[in-house]
Image (cartoon, rainbow, N blue to C red):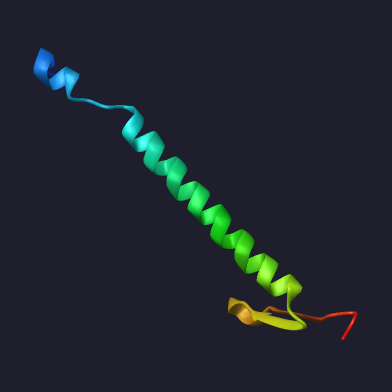
Length: 64
């Protein structure tokens, strides 16, 4: 496939950092949400998680 060169106007409208910024923001939000969920589970008196395929993870606080 033979490409066609971009005009000066088209080349100047490309902003490479936009995709990187969006990916970084999404990554930060994902990490924050997962951290809050994990913190809430580990701080709770008792917790139970059931994952697909029947895997269960449950625990109770030692101070209960």
